[in-house]
Image (cartoon, rainbow, N blue to C red; front, side):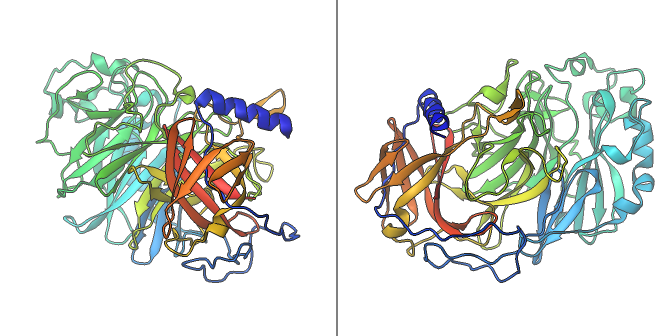
Length: 532
């Protein structure tokens, strides 16, 4: 273990991180607890956990596997819709149950025409496996739930389509296509799409044949209203990048009256406004969330398999159309080809990490959605795989929900543990609860889980630090910490870099033991702490 800690300190030095926290003295007595099964008997989750150091929360989680979950709340129920016709619902964000709509039973009837006309090929004949990453919103102007489905095809011949329903659980009716990609082969001529309606008859389409420029995949829609009530859709992945077009809120389809200039890495007359990615750099699953004065753009970098580095990174803009930048001012748009898995571009919400409060080690977390609830709480909803797999399945995945917070500089940071009903403490967190020994996680943006020579690598191991009452940090990393009395606000200064965030009381995962934790951000890097 000492060698691992030394290695981690080396990582801190490379990232320019040395730790500063304010701590409190005194060890807390550990209870001799035996790990229990993940599922426990249900009880109501407290809105504000009692400040007893080692209280346990009796809470039940019911897991589901929904890849690429997109969330919408209807009355008191949360719904998630994902790829491959997987949907689930919950009233508490802990216990999920799957359900079906008429899309499950009438897939062929709903999508037969668009599938046969555009996406189907001899090398890709299975409609069932090509229904990807939908997004569902309620459109007041239409009085309908609008279901935007990606119909995937080989060689980028994909299309995002619209279905509508009066009820969130359907039945849904097919409306039509919203945007196409892949009009560059004899088998998929542009005449079958709306591209000439937008660009004019005989328009030059050669730029859409270059994967580094404008050849994108019309998948992964996220549809949002802006502060003016206008409707926009962001979509795309890898290759040519991620774009945004304006929709007609009265139809839910493309707004053909809104036009775009063609300028490489800025905008395209058909594809719309470029907001992220490009030049064959990894990046997919764009998702937009407005909180306060900013629109936040989530992107998933890497490949979605357990060992391919899937991860969530965040940018923000004052305008829905961008430009989107991270804390260091880096643009979400890539103007040259590079491996962005080993870059510091974008704020990485979480790495693959090991905490003693977890029974499982997450890997390849991504393709998230996010939302602000009626009470103002912010959540990120994503799927995750696990180091070593689960139940004998290397690629097994499940949905997870973490609470998000806006730090003092207006950036989103995630709670260390999955959501269990916690609130951000206001005046109830004592200095005694803040002090003690912590596991300290630095979410290194330049590493990810993989297997090397039969052994897992790239999992962030915790440093052990103590937050002392005199405002110092001792242990595997040293520094100082401060907090604002009567509030949850805290700062950590490390090698001259100030990290800003919050303390909170959270239940660990597995045993659900309530501990003091913190989450903070500085210099484009997220850090977490969890009481040992």
